Image (cartoon, rainbow, N blue to C red; front, top):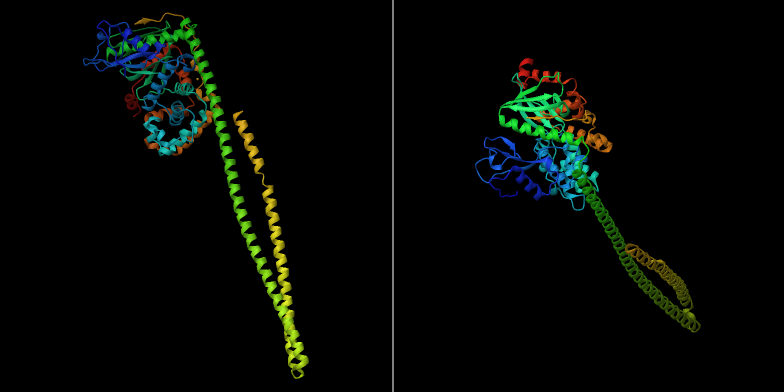
Length: 558
């Protein structure tokens, strides 16, 4: 909120200019100050009249809303300043979220993804968490209630579209949002309740392209249209409003309103929209050309800064990537060293075990040799005893044979022990040789050399309208923004199919049914404009007089 002090003689233009200067707006022709007067009627502050004389409410302070009053035909070519772009984006986003401007579900998801890009920048899965997205602030409540989807499922669909907007600047995301939103049927239209001379209650719609008439139950599909190029004069008297068309053969287009104050607002909007319609079809003024040149220079500066920041970011990411590679290599070397230490301990333990077995074998061999020597000594003694004791010869022979068999067995065991000792010695030497070869074959020096190379590389956005107007109404042949991008259109169709599976048909509103009817007929906003402007103005005025209100139509059908 902004607070301003005014004098008793302050004009509406003085207050408006002060606000525009504070906000930094130069494209002042799009905006106005809106308020609710002492009769409860929503009005626009008049520029050439003192503020205090404009039927303001008695309580202080007076409250005005700085709002978009007039809309451009094409935001991509007619909005110059970034601050203007942002104010349009914020207001239109609020109108869509609050359902004052109807938006189909699949388009709502796509627009929500542009809102995320504008608010958060590129999607970063490392820092993203679900609490960042408030679905109620991204989608109309109507859309949420009509589909059986959880918060995370809505989030998944929005993020899926969000990923498509990578590297878009904030201003580019807002412009993409507006380029899609301007194709919505209710975009930029001010609606007023009117009556024809039959008393049928209808809607009058005023926008940048002209005046349209709607059935009272349907604000999406206009029934009759008059482009600004067909209107010569607009005036009102009390509650009666008269529009004089360019055709001399056509009767005046007359309708009634409930309050004369509403006619003042209708007249003001018609005059201002008609003026902009004329200006857009003439060569640009020096002021506008200068503003565009200045904006181009500012955007070039921003793009240069963007490229510089992008290069810095890429260099930082490359450095972080190289650092991660170095850390991984260091970790691999540490793991390899740990494995080598473990292998060395195992080899040492195995070697100790083999040495102990060799020692045991040698000791057993020595004991066997001692036993063999003792056996031979005993045999000698027995031979001596045999020679001196003939009577014991047979007995000694038996003992000798027994001892000889024992000695032979012992010698055989000693031979086996000796062979086992030699085998263990050979196994130990082979194990030692393999270990030495494996240690020598490890390329630690080479790995460290690779690390050094990697480190070197890493361093290395009532008035008469008497004027000549180009009769070429290009808006009737305009394409929808989404139809120009096949990938985006395919994404939108996929979202539509997915949402259709979860849609609660019983929760559809009248606006949903009207929109589906338009789609089934193969129409869009611009095709409908061309259709309702067909025929001469006389026929269209007569068609208006024959229109009946919604309730009357129901009675006739019954």
